[in-house]
Image 1: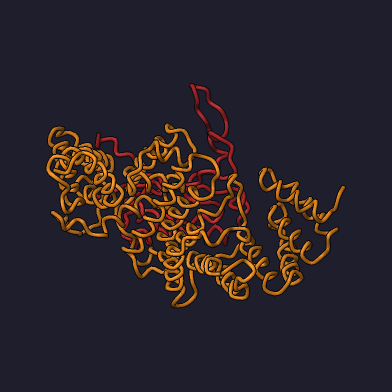
Image 2: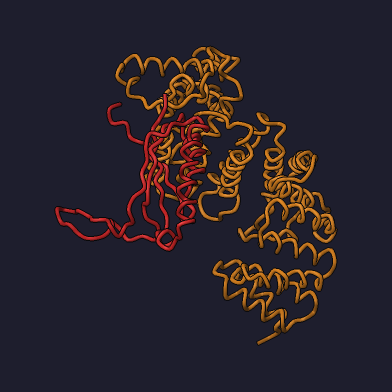
Length: 415
Length: 116
């Protein structure tokens, strides 16, 4: 006897751990996403009762898969016309249909992930599908996390699933030739899920934490299934290193704290150790991709004893790596700040002047804020005040306005 | 099992109107090459046509006949290919080779209405 409470906990645990495995194995049988999803949901409901009566099975994933597949077969038998009507998913040609527990191989989960993140689907639909099908979140949960009405999210998911079958998006892992571009789309989706949970101030914090944790477990799953893909390791490292600072990103009143003001003693050292180790593995073997390079940057920050003792020259080198992988004026701006810390505000201002000449960041408030900060540190208060005013004009965010106004008062003196 | 897709070619018309004979020959040659590439990529070319410029279009809506295309847009439907492919990835690989120097192509699965 397990008791209902233990069964509930075991089912919740199995939902988190096994959902992707169970669904992927069931899709192989039904070749229809909706039927598979319903059958798996039913299997979890059945588990609540069965596990309370007869105990939690040793292999929960196998139990759930067997149950889900039986429920799918029952549904197909009950409604003979259903099978004929199913818009079947495209299976890779010439691949034998595996049977029994052998289905539960990593590749099935990868097929699911790559199908959800196919480039023919919009980025938002990719993220919603990944959360719905790979993580097993409900449409209501996903809608709450992305701050859209549930009906909107339901329509988005339905439309995407319909396109998968109507346009014949294949249920397969891309060929080695296609893999880099396709993998980048998958990693971008996982990163989007993470940043949605991590950065947006609105929405319930519980839902937000859920998104962050789901993104990390997705990245873990990918790293387990593709241990040689450096960008996968880079993404996992980046998420771990960023999330290690979760507790210190805001003060008691919920105001965002910049890196220099965060209490480093409250950073999660276990996550930093793991993230830094993964980041250095991702950096090995030639020019890194954008996720590995970002992870390496996060590792430099996370391992510094305090802001002033950050290894700025190393950070500049890491930003050079990132610029090669991902040329963007915003990355250049961040690099210029690191240059200023390594070689003084005048060196940073020279870099900023070069970026400004390019013109693409003219309306970007952080460019003006960064220039203002460097001018202030160089002791050029009048010029700094002018830049703080320019940044203020471009900023609507109240917390940021407060920060900029305080700095402006410092350099402009009493008005 | 395979799926039919329509590759719709949307392009600006002006460059074609201003094109000299050598340019036109080059475009014909590019489309000739494309016809061969469909098979090389494992697909089947079922058909295709170039359309006369949109200035020749006539719109019928609620029985009212008007001169001109359905909607005035910068890029207009200038031609199409009907292909058969294993899945969307194969169709997209083929579509990437479709000549459309002054615009792009849209890939639409054909709805098999007989399948219920």
